[in-house]
Each structure stands twice: as C-alpha cells, then as structure tokens.
Length: 100
Image (tube, rainbow, N blue to C red; front, side, top):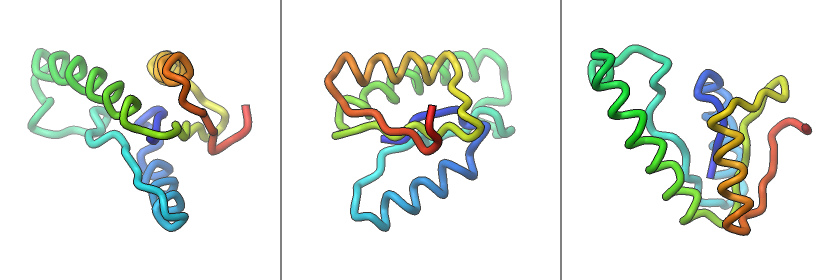
C-alpha cells in the first residue's frame, strides 16, 4: 500500500513501478485532489469526496501486507502520519522511500 502526500504524484507512480517490478501487488491512492478535475471542482463535492477517499485509504491499508510511505524530502503530512499510525496499530510493517 502506498501512502503519502499526493503532491508527490509523480513519485507515487515511480514507487508503484518499482514495487510492481519487484512482484508486489500495489494498492495506491486513485485520486489526486490537488490537480483540478470536474469530480471535485465544487468545494462541497471535494469535501465529501475527501471523506470517502480517507476511509477508502484505510480500507486499502487493511488489505495490504505492508505500507510504503512515499516521502520525498522526508515530508510526512498530518494525513500520512494518521495513516502510518493506523497501519502500525493494525500490525502492518511500514517502509519509507526516503529515510526518516
């Protein structure tokens, strides 16, 4: 499972590539709310979708064997910290693309 800030969307794609090439099934965020799109153009829509996506992300962590945090420049935001805590509480190993 890939976690991290979607502001690093290109780094997510790279991590996905390497994890897939290593023979791992990759679960990852499917929406980047930081890039404009009609599905979240309306602020109310965006707020509702953010709630849905946050819950969906935790369900993906439930399915995962481990979590890989995509953290260029060692950046870990509040949402990612919550996901790391959730993963650890579930007993999931956590790795990082950049040492912390």
